[in-house]
Length: 206
Image (tube, rainbow, N blue to C red; front, side):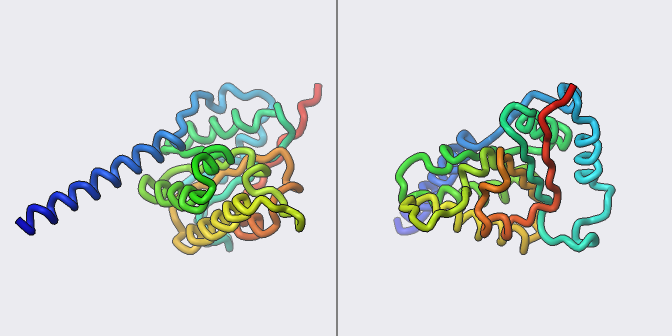
């Protein structure tokens, strides 16, 4: 009887874990359709990214960097940042996750920290993969002394800790941050993220 009870409890825990993973997958999984061929005027940037992502290139550790590959893409709205990221995902042919402030913050404010950790743990469970943080300036914007938004600060601190953990693990996860303005990003987050490739897309000329 005791064994049956323990087995039943174990089954419930497994079912609970599977449902949790399904919810996280539904919230963050990203399946873009655009490729590099759909982009115009960014050939020099695309070539640079391909070299950076090429598995045949020297390991980042040999180049003096630690941790996973990290790309920061910046530029004003409409220059093609999101399309470029779609191209990167399809070029790498890896599962990808995409988070926004709304997806991390949805639900009870007290669950902000667990939402962040669940995201990174899920990324670990499916690696190698790509983790995209869209509108990064909204997720981890500069802190203001008068700010009363405690939940946003918890989110920023948790993301800093999560990225530092990934760097120590040298996890096979490529992190891509997308922002309209690098100047609006939290300094502590930028120090922790240590983006090894920074790409700025200018407004197209003639």
